[in-house]
Image (cartoon, rainbow, N blue to C red; front, side, top):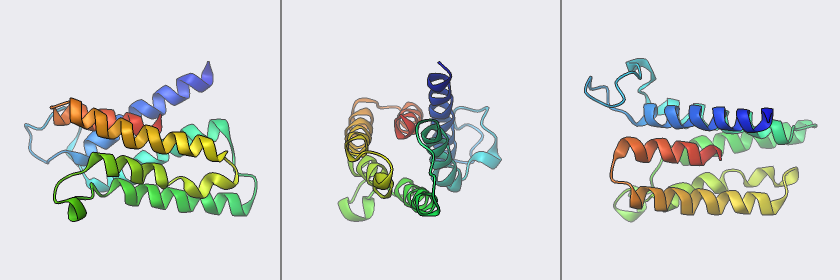
Length: 152
């Protein structure tokens, strides 16, 4: 029960931080309760991965320096993946590739996480973020959903 609660909290927090990192500084941006100091792109890029690794720590914990190094590498790759929508390649924001990039960022964890779990994460992130963004027309809901999918 505690595990499910932590996963829910980490996912909700990531959803909020993902939205916060994509918000404009405009006072009319929604949700209005998110303060301006959180409305920075680095919030999405570096705090959402922290939520993911917090949730991951419930299921597995690195027990060596190599594993810890791979977690840090994956953290950095996750931040890099969250910082782009691949518009520089496709000409427009591509949430499918964005999700695939987020999934691929965890590949270094294959040393202590079964490969098939990482493959499931890659598919869930790629298809989940792509379909979510295709079906939803509201940027607030889209970003909250992608932030939650990133952790789940």
